Image (tube, helix red, strand yellow):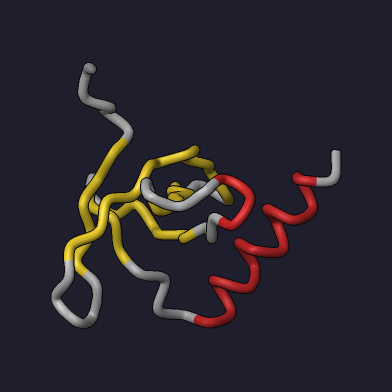
Length: 80
């Protein structure tokens, strides 16, 4: 079995490592955002984690307005 290059390991606030699969990286107004799902989750129950790509690093979106804008943008494109 070959390694999936779309897998990343993130450490949660409790210090536990969890593998996520990068589903897609989208550009919104010149900023890249990565959409990730837990690698172990069943597809129908998978949550989507949205992280900002900053200097080739994944970072939480700290600004609530920015996060809401990204979610709105993604929901708008999901219905096409």
